[in-house]
Every structure is written in structure tokens, then in C-alpha cells.
Image 1 (spheres, rainbow, N blue to C red):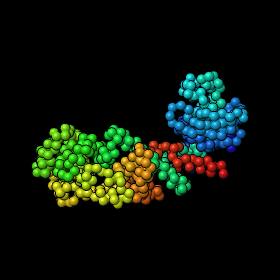
Image 2: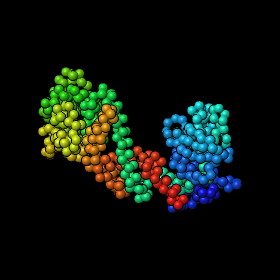
Image 3: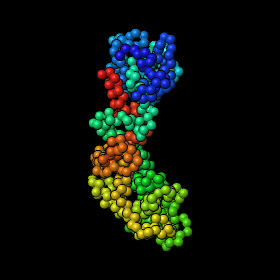
Image 4: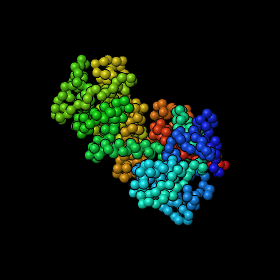
Length: 471
């Protein structure tokens, strides 16, 4: 590709092209494009991607001082401190160099960032810049080999990226998803699912170590948070901390004492009641709290507003009590089950008789059993059992546990929420919980954050835009 003039490389601000927003240029004499924001709107991240993905013209590469340049390995982008790309290999005038690569919009940013004083940058073998505006040196005083990409970068890749960053749709690439290869999309979603589980593994591992490496106690805490749904996950977590599993296990054969412990430690028994049942719970909890030196969690943390009554924390606590009694406090059966159906049987619990006619203490309601239900059970499997299984597999080096976690997600239907509805409208309907979890992670960790350069879909779109332009 020959060097393009300014009008060809970047349209002016008052010009509208079909592919995306227009870009700013500043003309100088002689005519030469000079990048100003938002002309190269997203800085070094995009330039790093262009370099690492080789999305530029490769013919007759030379450094800014005229030496021949061959790229053997552009390097891999890293986000920690130090040079931008690691493990690069280039040949300059026939001499092989291996090391790191640093990327800047302009050469002068090397000095502006203080790299000339930093020994960490002594191993840089090539300085990649969009515009070369000054010669720079390393800490030892060596002139840094530099390549200028300004005349070699594809207009299409920049315009597409600019459009992705400004798109206001459900996801930045909503109008372009049809261009994505289905096989590559499936592979990317599998990878994103693993990323989601690994991210949750970090949370579970922290909890596991904080609880002294007790797998049952860890599962208990995760179950409690899952019973709280998103709204009351934190208060349920506080309840689990306020009431250790080993204490509940002592009373797993006594329904009233189990509920007394849970409701009392939740802080929900600290008022004067009318009904006999909560008064009995209150009396029982007072005895047990003194016996086990228990301090209740703060009652103010619980949320009842704008919720379906069946999801009130009182109902969910009563259901958790029944699960703890059914599993005899050990909970190990939930982790040992191979099939979702076995776990559904264990989670098929209903709140005790008092709750048939109540959603809250002292507030009568139309009689109705308060069964956890299939949707609620699936939520607990996805958000508690699967993450704990996957984390234990990593902690213990037992791949079979991690594989079983993935298999459970494949057996489950996707959750119902607005994010998955949005993907379905774009033709990407989740058929399993595994695909649903991947789409949730894709939306939350990539699309909302507009990390298109790190996304497999964004990568393919940017690559295909360049290939299409050069075909």
C-alpha cells in the first residue's frame, strides 16, 4: 500500500462515511496527516493491537534511519508495568534482535514518559510509533531503532474501531455480528466461559482460605449468597459469617432450632412479635446465642422493597433452613452429584408450615406453599455449586471436578434476564446455562467496557476489515 494523502487516510469532521464516525485531521504544509485526538481516538491500545496483529502494510519495511526491518515475532501485548510487548524478534539490517517492543503515538513520548532513565526499557529492540517526531535513546545512550506506521496503517481498521467505540447499541458490534464466523464465535464463547469461572474461582479461593480450607463451610457461604439472589447476597453472606456451619450442624434434626439460629443471627428476631411462632423462635435463639456466644448480623442490611414476596429474605432463609436439614448439615451430596437431576432432588425444599400463610412475620397472607422451585434451584447450582466445584478442582489439582462443573452448566437451561434477552434479539440465543454464562461475561467484561481489542469478535472484525480492503 502506497502512502496515502491526508484526505484518503482520514475524512474531515464534516464528512460522513457509511462505516463509522468521521475522523479529525490537521493539514500542514507540505500536506501530511498529523494525528490529534480524536483522529487516533483511543491511543496506544489500538496501535498496540495493530502492531501485534500485523494490520499494516509490510512491504519494504525500514526503520526511520533507513535500515531494513523484518518482523519475525511482533511480540505479545502485556498489561503490567514495563514495555508494551514481550518476546519480540526482529531482524535489522540482517542482525537478529530478541527482546521487547514499546509503542507510542509519537516518538517523543519515550522521553515524556521517562523511559530514557528506566533500566526496564534497556531491552527494547524496536520503538513502534504512529508518527516519528524525534530521535530517542536508551539509558545507555543507544539510539533506539524506530518504525513509523503512519503511512502504513489501514484506514478501515481505525474507522471500524472508532465506530465500535461510539456505537450506542446493545453491544458495540451489534450491527456487524453477522460477519463473524460461527465456529470462531463458538470457540471464543467457550474461552469466555472459562474466564468467568476462573474469575469466580478467585473469589471462592479467597473465601476458602479465609475459612481455613474448609470445603463444606465454603459451600455453605456460597449457598447462602445464592439464596439471597443479587439483592440480598451480601446480607446472606453476613449471616453465614455470623452463624458457622458447624453450629447449625449441631441442630440439624430440630427444625425450630435451625430456624431460630438462622433468623436470629440474621437479626430478624429483634422486635416484639404477635404470632406465637416467631416468639418461640426468639426465645430459642436467645438461649442458643448465649450458649454459642453468637452475635447477630445487622438487620438493616436486609432488603424487602421492590421484590416479589416469594423472594423475600424471610422466605429464602426458611428454605435454606430446610436444605441444611435435608443435607444433614454436611452438604457434601451437593458436590458429589453427577447429574443435575440429583441436585434438583436435594434442592426441592419448601419453607416450614408457618410460611404457608406468611411472607413476613406477623403479616398473614393467602395460603400458598413456599417451594424453592426449579428456577431457584438452577440459580443456586449456577451461582454456588458450579463455582465451588470449579474452584476446588483448581485448588486440589483435580480436573474431574472442574469438568463436572462445566458439565452441569451444559445440562442446565439458561437463566432468564434482560442481558440474555438482548443477545437473543441479535440472533445469539443461549441454549444452555453454559452459553448463557458466557454471553453474560462477554457483555459485562468486554462489551460494556468496550474492550473490543481484547475480544475475539472485535479482533476478527478488525482483521476482516483490513483483509477486505486489501483483497
